Structures are given as C-alpha cells and as structure tokens.
Amino acid sequence: MSVLKTVSDNGFTLFYSLSLCLLLTACNEDSHQSIAADAEGLPDLSAVTAYSVNANGEHLSCAKNYRESCLLAQFPPLGVEKTVSLTISDIESRLFVSHPWMAESFLSALSTLPSVLLPLFRSVSAIVIADDVRPSFYSANTATIYIDPRYLWRDEQEWLNIVAKDDFRDRFQANVSFLAVRQHVDSAGVAARWSSDTFSASNSTRTIDQLRPALFRLLVHELAHANDLLPPSVLSSLSPNRTIYQNITATTPLHQTLYDQLPLQDTLLFDVADVLYQGTPPSETVHDLTALQVGAHFEAEGASDLYSYTNKKEDLAMLFQSYMMLEHWGLQDRFMLLSQNEQGLEGCERYSVAWGQTGRMFDPLVYDRMILAAEALLEIELPVRFTVVLEATPIPSGTSWCEIINSIKG
Image 1 (cartoon, rainbow, N blue to C red):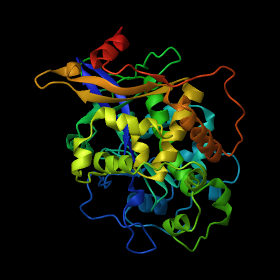
Image 2 (image 1 turned 90 degrees about the vertical axis):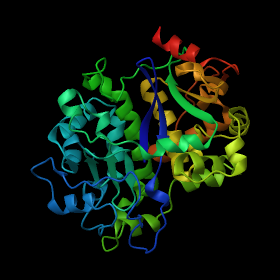
Image 3 (image 1 turned 30 degrees about the horizontal axis):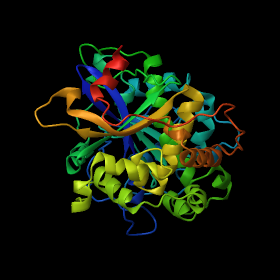
C-alpha cells in the first residue's frame, strides 16, 4: 500500500512517500489472506463497475472482494492469459472504477508514461480506482492494485466525486519526536515541483502532464509488489485450481534474493517502522529517539527510505521506485529526518534537518541493493550506468526546513 503524503507550507506542497501494505496481515486459512473486519483505511467499493464493455463480470466480482481470494482460473493475472506483449487495451479490460473519468484519466496518463511499465502489468489481475480508496494499496488476495483517485482528478467536478477521507496513518506520526521526509531532486539538487493532490483555489485544474510523475511513482511501487510475489517467470506454471493467494504463498518472492545477499538488519529501525507505519504502540526507547539518532542508524545500512524497514516487500519496492525515478525521470532521492524546534513556532519554522542525504541511492550500500532489486524486477542485467562517480551528499545538520522550502519556491 502506498500513498503520496504531503507537508504544506504557505500553500506550497512537498511530496514524500509513506506506504503501508496489506501483505503482512495475519492469515488464518491458507486459501486467502485474512483481513480484520474493522481494518482501517479499507474501501467499500460498492460503487465500482467495469469501464470496458468487454470486461468479465466474474473479474469485477473478484476484484471488489479483496478480503477473499478467487481461484486463479476465475481471475488470472494478465500475463497468464496474454503471453505476448501487453497493450493499453489489455489493461483497460481489467480496469474497474467508481466513476468513468477515473479510467479516462488513468488511461490517458498511462499512454504517455514510459513503455517499460506495460510488461510489469503481467503479474496484475486488475486495477481498481474508486472514490473511497485512500490510501492506495496492493492486495495479495486478488493480485490487484487499488488506486486513490487523488492521483487522477483534473478539475473541481472530478475532485467533488472523491470521498472526503483522511489517511488513518497520519496520527501515527505523533508517536515519535521526528519527521521523515523524502523528496525527488534533479542532478543539481533542485527538488521537483509536483502539483498537489488536493484541490484548492490555487490548484483547481491539473493536466495529464502534471499527473504523470506522481502516478508513475505510484505504479512503479505497486507493480513492484505484484511482480515480487508473482514473478512473470512463474505465471505459466501457476495452478488454476488454487486461489491467487495460495499460488503466491507457494512462490518464492523476488525479495528473498535481495535478503539472501544484502539484508537490512537494524532491529531498532524495524521497531521504528512498526510504530510509524503500522501504528504499533512505541516502546520508551522508540518514543524518545531523536532524529539525529535515527539518522545515525539509518546511514549505516542500505535502505533507501525509513519505510523500507516495514517489511521485506516494501524494501524491494522502495529500492525499485528509487531506480525507476532516476532512470525515467532523472530524479534522485533526498531523504531527511527533521527535528521539531522549540514549541510555538509555526509552519516550516517548526523543523530543521537533523540528518539528511541528497542522492541517497548513491550511497554504496544502497546502490548495490537498488541495482539488485531493479535487475530482479525488470528481468535484465543492468550495465554500469554511471561513468562519473555520484555520491550521496550530506545535508548539513541544522539546515532550516524553511530554507529548503524557499529554495524550491524560488
């Protein structure tokens, strides 16, 4: 599960990524992944219908019921039925939405995104975009991606179709004393200016071109989950008489290769991630951690983001996201841990950088893991990409968050 999270100051919006995945929910029976009836943040999907007139009604039923897992024969991933190259039309046939404009915007944007995305849909059974999906997520029960329409609205009328729904994870931030922020910056260290996903007087219309980078990042992340758990190489050998979830649990995930060679091991950061992204009550140790202390632990390992410590699947997806944003958008990661300044300050003055790096993926520990993740998911051997030495550049401790914000505005 992935969502575009924002920090706003004086009307300008910065984007960073938080994610939470359904993949680790406890399983009480082996035919499907068990999801609690009162699980937070999960959509109703009652208004969802097929966008294409050629869609299969059984596929729609399976995609809507993400608490259960249909037989693979009933709801096969696209690459099981289509062994040649996928097309936009193939994806359209598995597109289910609560409002037609969501499909229209998605397909328009997808047709302009790098074609490298299309083969990654082979491991996906459907794409659902609905008014009450918040945040976006991937389900192992259905091999389906569920997309928050905030990535896709283009005008006020479309925005008004979206259910006003808070991200339930926002309150977890109050359990720690620091803020983790991720930006995408160009080779000169200038942060990308992406349009906000929230409607406002100053952000009332959005073009397809403005939607593309955030949607690309979301799709790369969720498609990484799909291909991790059902690699294209196994699609032809899946059992039609077992559920999608049973087939997934019988398959060796791609992230196992990453962890066999270059695992993350910092137990403290795994505890921090549980608190920040899973809502686990913090221990006294985690509650009292400073941003600088977290940064010292983070720098010593090869994660691209603090969220990578949520689970192995998210680690792989975050590394792949870093690679793809660099390869296809020319954007590097900037990752920062912010300390909150003395009480009473407002806006960006509340925070300063305690630890940070620009070009986080060029830290040797991260870079080797990123390339390994990209090679596994893209099924290619990557050549040496950089003829000049690129390094992760430290951000001076104490740098004002306002200074970073204002440099972007300028």
